[in-house]
Length: 234
Ligand code: CA
Image (cartoon, rainbow, N blue to C red; front, side, top):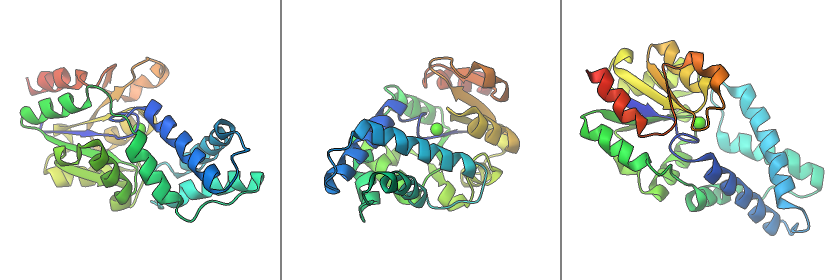
């Protein structure tokens, strides 16, 4: 084992923090639109529904800018409620992610321990380049990673092989020498498996049990990765 790559949202940062971030984006959008009469939670739920429907359709496909997909999701909701998406929606989004994003409590110690074992530690994420860099810098962990590979750079969304292959090229390792950690079996485990990488699913609540078959390991906490890697190093 020579390299470990992480997914970002739901793997290094929590879904709880992501939800709080998105709700605060909606609050700010409604404030700027003078529509504080609308219930932000209801608008947020509609936005999440539109957004996840759009992203579901993009899995494995050619990359399109996430800022455009997010903007389109919000535009659909805004149209129904008679307001417009602010011009600087993406800047609001970046700022709120930086402010409300939340690392898993054992993320930093896990990354540092893996680096201490001499491994290449990277990220493979479905994201825009400016988003991931801004977010990692805000979390104070940008410098910890040996490589960061985005869908923007690879030109495709996971589980397409290209983001994974590009990450392997950057690390200069063979697929069987690398482990991918993610929280989405269909995108993360399947994507890794398709290029010959091992995968571990972060599933703290065990709720995705029916989808475990695509993953080589299932972990309930990030630091479990350290023992898996030590075992693989023999
Ligand atoms: Ca994820």
